View 1 (cartoon, rainbow, N blue to C red):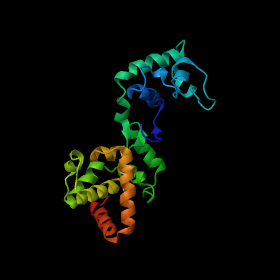
View 2: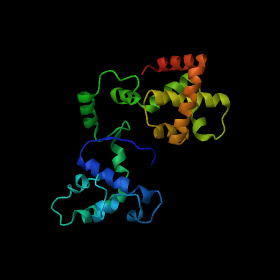
View 3: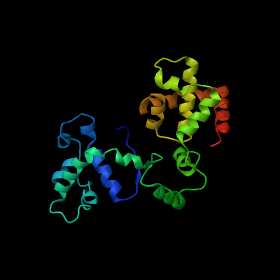
View 4: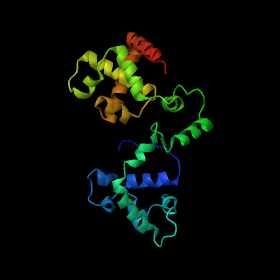
Length: 224
């Protein structure tokens, strides 16, 4: 499901749900018929107690099953039940960085994050100011007088429209208002395509002073 990422998880209950979700990835993707059939998974260690690498600490997850005869069996049974609720965990994904309640996010922000976000850490701005991607894109698209529906629904767009689209993508990325996956969903692109467009427009902005001024002016008008 894309590149490696890390998230701050509120507590063991959320961690257990994430474990179920990750182990079910190959099954959900149609790569195997049974979870245990996926060769590169740690599932067999959790569900059957099979030998595993020394760096894998299954106890963090399995210790949550108390007052049961067999923790491995309990894990197997619960992961099967989880199939009906596997999207639940993402309902509590906050800012693409936290898995937990809003109260948990506020606690982390107050205790660990600075009042002013670091310029080179765009995700900090998203958390600290609670910026919404819809708000950013709506403002930016309005200022550029471009149609977001065109980018999502049309496979062929003009060179000018593509330039505006890439500028919107870059603004959303630079402000740290969403993950590449979330940005891509707004434009009908994959997360890897977003990375590619960011690299392209960034290189152009570094060379094209007029485009750089347009970008800086647009960003200042959004006032985030």
